[in-house]
Amino acid sequence: MNKPFSIIDNLRTIDFLQNITDSNINELSALFTLEKIAMGDPISFGEDLPEKVSILIDGQVRQLIQHPVSKKTTSLCLYESNHIIGWSSIQTNSPSELVTAASDCNLLSIESKKWEETLITFPNILKELNKNVNPTDLWAILSSLDNLNRIRIPDKPKELKQWFRDL
Image (cartoon, rainbow, N blue to C red; front, side):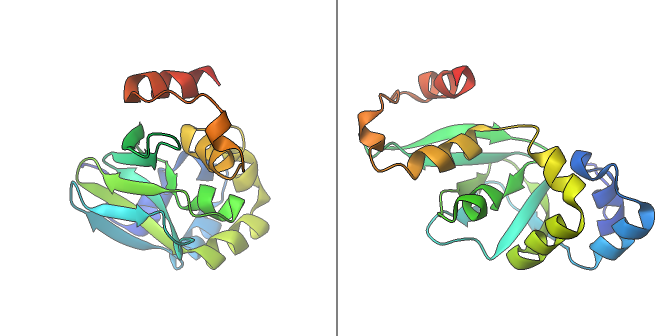
C-alpha cells in the first residue's frame, strides 16, 4: 500500500474525480474518512442498505455472492483501486454487496446520503461512473429479479466470472 495518506491527496488519485477542481476536492475532503481494513475483514455484509459508500484506494477487495440455485457463497470478482463499495446496493435499493478485504486495504468512506448529495452537486462524477458496468452492478440488477432461479447461472467461480465477462 503505497498511495498518499491524506484524504485530499487520495481524492486526487481517483479516476472518476479527475475533472473536479482542486477547490472542490478540498471541499469534498471534509465529507470523507480514511479507513484501514485488514486482509480477510468484512467491509459490507450485504444484509442492509449501506450507511456509507467506500472507495477503494489501495489493496484488493473480493465481492462474494450467494448462488441463487446452489445457495453456495462464491467469489464474483476481485476489485482494485477506484472500486466503489455500496453504490450498487444504493442504486437498486437492494442490499446486494457482500465484500471482504482480499488484502490489506485503504478506503475513503462517505455517508450514503452525503454521497448521493455529492453526485447531485457534481453530475460529472455520475457520468464517469456510468461509463463502466462491473459484475457487482450486474449482480445487483440480476439479484433483484423475481425469476432469477430460471436463469442458468454457472455454479463454478471460474465459469461464473467468464459468464459475467460475456454479458
